[in-house]
Length: 126
Image (cartoon, rainbow, N blue to C red):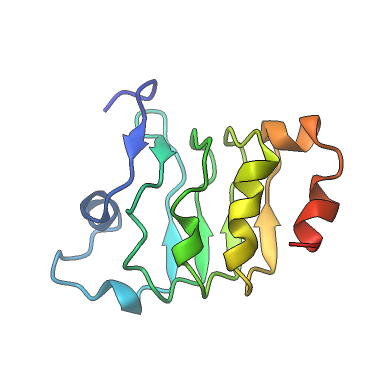
């Protein structure tokens, strides 16, 4: 898929990308590293992460995400790397309110960090 169109995340795409069998138990996966590449950039999470129930670390750096819809199902998430995406609104950051275990969050080079100077304070008080 072309980089301009972007990828809508699916479980099947993830499993192919990380080279695990389609009969694998997704709940056992604790870490996913899915940075964008020149040819493949994730534009939407959709329901692709729904069954990664016990995921603790997620790297989605260098993609073209504008929305965090779908991240709320990751209740055990502790580390989230969103470096160099296209998150541009506080509304999207508000979606992280369900991720109570989140301790590390990288939002560098996202438009929201430039347009909302108080985004850190907002996140602390979620």
